Amino acid sequence: MINSNGQTVNTAPPSAPLFINDGLAADTKYGSSLNSLSANWGVAAHPGGIDHYEYSIGTASGAVDVAGWTNSAVSRSVTKAGLSLTEGSTYYFSARAYSNTGHYSAVAVSDGQRVDVTSPTASVVVLSTLPAGNGSFSAKLIVTEAGELSSTPALEFITSGGQAVPLSVAWLTGSTWTAVGFIESYHSTGTASFAVSAVDGAGNTGTALTSGITFNIDTKLDGAAGGTMSNSDGFSMNVPAGVVSGDFFISISTMEPAQNNAADALSPGSLKLNINDLVRDFSVKDIFDNPIHTFFTPTTITLAYPDADSDGRIDGDNVRADLTWIYWLDEVAGRWMPVEGTVRHPESNTMTAGVTHLSRYSIRKYVLSSLKLPSLKVYPNPCDFNKTGLNITGIPPDETAPEIYIYNSAGELVRTLRHGDGIDSLNAVLWDGKAKGGNRAASGLYIYFVRTEKYGKGSGKFLVLW
Image (cartoon, rainbow, N blue to C red; front, side, top):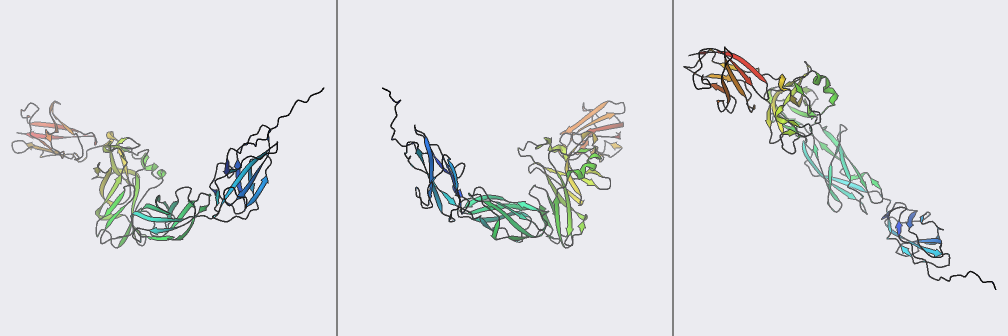
């Protein structure tokens, strides 16, 4: 007798596909075509093996009204073409497995994909007073999209001079977003146009504006009233009333660093900052575009530096702010020169100065060894201490720790003057003629030597009489 090796009877169905995704990769919520849809699904299992897979498409979960059950062989991804789909409708894929034993699995159904082939559109409503002048600028961006956006839309305006200015966009409510920016001093006066970009969940990019396409910018100032022009970086200029005749424009702009290389090389007394570009070109023009370079009355310029942690050092460069100064570019000499009367404002991280000539201005670090005290004066000279004390002037009031050493003609130190002992809070010096022990100094020739931390050294001579 000869026996077979037997056969197993299995009437159980295969397992359903592990998952089913709309699209050819991770599950998507959207379809971006009116004539094709895609899906992919996971494996099914059966002891006898899987013969093939089948899929269908419907307008409801599990429905087959768009495409009936179709054999996909052993492929677990499919793109069905030749369909006639409706914008805004949602379609569902179903998938099942068929085993080698002739049994179907349970059906796996996707969560649907909405057909969206229409790009978003938008409109802009300007909230700022028009024409927009120098300073903060705000608007509302209203996006029209039946579905949802994949990311925050982008909005910018392009000035009449071709300057593209991105605005900061934040969601407000519904389909409305806020957009804020700044009209800088160097933005061209004229008609500016908005540009938008919004991407929906289906990947459609919209750039069309239906309203609020343009707005006007006007940054001119009235000469009779004067005014201030400022940039968002803290640099500004104030022109007093009546200094300029007629309407005028102020511009405070950056420039290519290479334009200052020659002046940097010819200015050993100061150093540019390496991380921060604090050079600005200050200019004034009348309404006919004619430049105005000089003024009879000083105008105030403000230069700013970054110090976010308020540690007294310029961020990035790590330079002490009190070791910096405002410098102007001497176009004739081709080098940077310190601006007299620079005033520091550490509470606002700015420096100001009154100027009558417009040029490039910059915050630079001065080289201590190169500094002088050219304004030092001593009087009366000779000094009769029976009548008055000896005055020494010319130490800048922002110097924090000046010291004065007084020597006799033999080179002996007679007296040292410091804050609270001969030097007042404004760095004015008055010597009473007494030596360090309290005795009066003898008549004769004396030499004084001034040492400062910020401005270098200076010296002079005077004669004492009793």
